[in-house]
Length: 424
Image 1: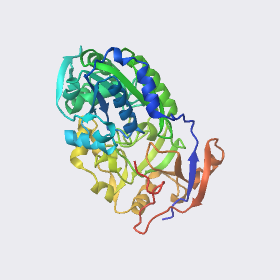
Image 2: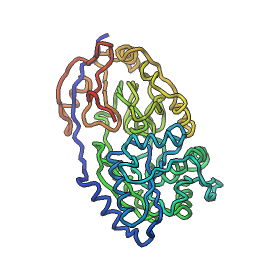
Image 3: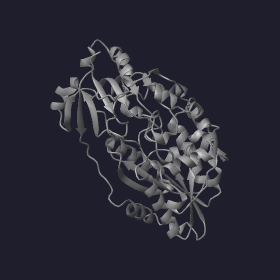
Image 4: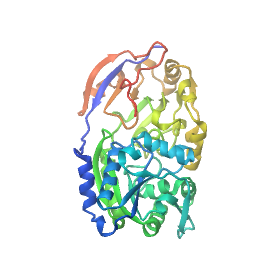
């Protein structure tokens, strides 16, 4: 079969970036005057999630340093629902993999899956909260604000989600994801969030917004009473800053890596146009991708292949790297069991593409519209097929780096990744 030739292009995004991250964290937190609430010797729990947030270890250490400047004791608490196989050891391993260690941060890590039920919402939903965080005098909720991969509203993924799903641990995540079938996401997060702020010693939030180049674009320290309004504004900013695929309609999207450090669904549904339907774009999606081929899992995902079920194709080595138990726990907890499914798979990438291209429509394979990306966070430099050349040449913000050239396969018949040995 003749394959399309590929062109390497660079996308130019408007992207703010913070120069001195520790100084920005300190300035933001100092503006909240937390010393008026925190007494010497008190403990302050600081959340650490499972996402691959840029500079997260540096940001977490800076928060710990500010707490120490108040003569208080910082304690790091993994806050990631059911991730890490739903075990304390697995969750600790995830954050340590991001460099959030006791040695680097100078703070004790207290990982537990135990929760305390602190109240019940007006809808009758029990509110679970991490026991270790609850036993601390105060809690600082740290997390990235961005569009959620499944929920739609003025608040999606951010500080509220960390209070609900992250600090709710496996027990809380299960209940909240079930409750979404009967109540709106906004209704649940407002009710649970208000309860957590009132009952669980929330001292402040540290919201992170990333640029299109997966770098820290903004850090905002937020007072508990301002969580809702501030997060609504930050979500708008995050949405504007998100990277995008270079073209609206794609026949075959090849994704080098997916993983929980990339997105809650392994690959961001906002990027690939699968937010409302696992296998087809809807009228509400901005991008229409006919077929997806996932080539591998990130090392940092530890075998969690959540989202693989949204792809139509993969290869055998990816299937063999899946930890079925961890993946199924996470997908079932999130009420998205189809995300754990195994797609059609073949021995080599060459075989996958030979079988995938004929399913993209009435187009000869060499003329197919194909895009290859490292992952859904890293879209600055991608490969696109020659069929896109007229669009590339007519578009501001797209630069041809090299090509056209034949698809690059190694001796085993597998594609070379877009960015060489790039890994998250």
